[in-house]
Figure 1 (cartoon, protein in one colour):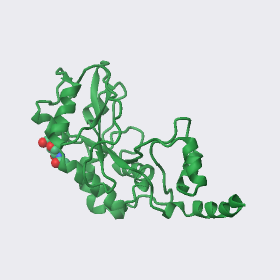
Figure 2 (spheres, rainbow, N blue to C red):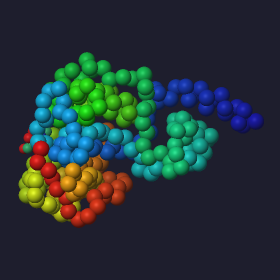
Figure 3 (cartoon, helix red, strand yellow):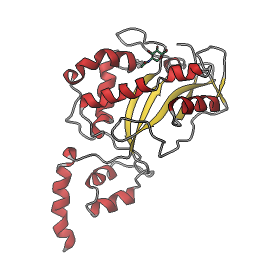
Figure 4 (cartoon, rainbow, N blue to C red):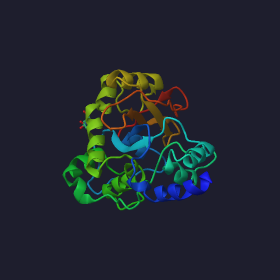
Length: 255
Ligand SMILES: *[C@@H]1O[C@H](CO)[C@@H](O)[C@H](O)[C@H]1NC(C)=O
């Protein structure tokens, strides 16, 4: 009997999912070193605005769960009516569960007008380096907004302005340079010295990701910082990602 009563309720809530507050625990704020993005065998393409500065660029601001949600847990919570969105998500999760929400509102496309006053700053700080699109960074921002931003509980302008503010508050390029970690074709830096410099300079530990250069050597590719749900302050990461840097040293290639 209970189920028969509850089912229409669950179904009607499912339909209004996009207008509900999205459920997540923190943001990953991800920045990439352009010299490492470009310094692989695949290379990169500059945006139509020209070669970006030799500075970290934003990849994205990604809502994340503190604990991956397993299939069974999600289904149970959905049946209890605790988390209706979980029912939708559970349809799309693999065996390992779901570790972040994505594509929360496909009807909410990024409107150029909404972020018009941020264009210049976004072009400097969030440039595309992809060869797949038209070279317009707006395509990159639209994709990030659609996949991650629609799950952030933020308005379009607030989402982008918040990312820019966090980047400006902790200038990674300057923080690393202050520790003697500067772009170089030959120098190798210990992964722990990079971690320590970021922890010292920002007050919070970050997760690091490396990739491989055309010469096969590890290079510092992306830095994952953790940010509170309001997208205002750095926080200690609720999760420690495995450092995806094989070996003890990395390069920071010249860009
Ligand atoms: C960070 O520092 C670099 C190097 O000094 C500079 O080029 C860049 O504009 C700074 N970025 C921000 C967001 O202030």
